[in-house]
Amino acid sequence: MTSPSIPSSPASALALAVVTEPLRAAPAAPGAREENLRALLQTAADGGVRAVVSRPEGDEERLLGHAWPFPSPFEVTVRTVASTEGLDRVEARARRSLERMGLPRAEVLLVSNAADLAGSEGRALWDRVRGLKDRGLFRKIGFVAEAADGPGLLARRLSPDVVRLSCNLLDQTACRSGELEALHGLGVAVQLSSVFARGALFGGSATPEAWHGRELELSRVRRRLAEARIDPMQAALAYGLSLPCGPKLVVSVASAAEMRAVLAAVHAPAPDIDWAQLDLGRGTPGAEAPGVRAVSSAA
Image (cartoon, rainbow, N blue to C red; front, side, top):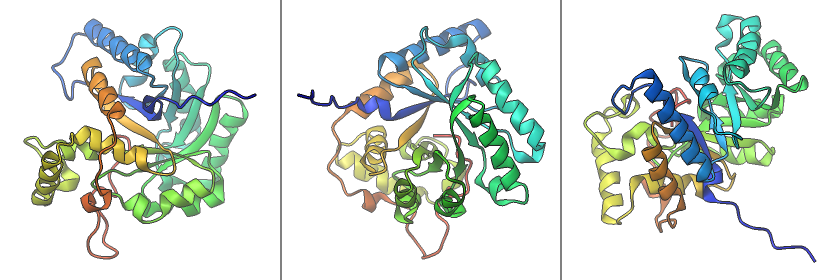
């Protein structure tokens, strides 16, 4: 007799994008910054998060390499540098990312821009990335895209393991266009970026650039959530968890306190709300939704 399966924790659907620069907190001394990062990663691990995403810019990878819990429970996603730096550089920098993080191998390597794969050197770039997988340095490979890039068609041609695509409560274009469904049908795992719409859900003094001119609509959405007594973070995560493709939700977090807030929100009961009514990406047919061409690394 087989034992009943134990449902996984909602936190296992999260992929942590660590904010190492003082973007949302006061600057800290180097030693304190590393200690804060250790506390953040340990809080995530204790809460059931099992995925971390990195980027090759700045000092993030080195800091992660010094701060992993031991033993580390995390599967790591690495992004390539732009193909304009040359294919040799793309390959060497992916290897260097592993060295900087102290990893013999990582879970996923993503080409940082789907447009690079559609260019004249796209096939050669994919062959380089696939070669790194064949050598056992990365278990899976894929690319970062937007709905406008037609990731479903690109996935049919290249057969990636993973695609990172921006989609959120305020801009559901990737879902509405059928791209998420197409990727799911191909058996491609999905990572969702821009889950928090670059902070547009939370208000504040500055509206994210991608949403300039939409302040009144954003205010209406926030008011609707407030009237329904739904926390914006809870709503953003619940929307991602509701998608049938079972994506990993890439969330950017700057501190252990923020991590605890995200964990509380992801474990909260799903709100009873019509997600489509909050989709500000709808508009003139054929029009590009806010943020469609935004960089996909942020949550």
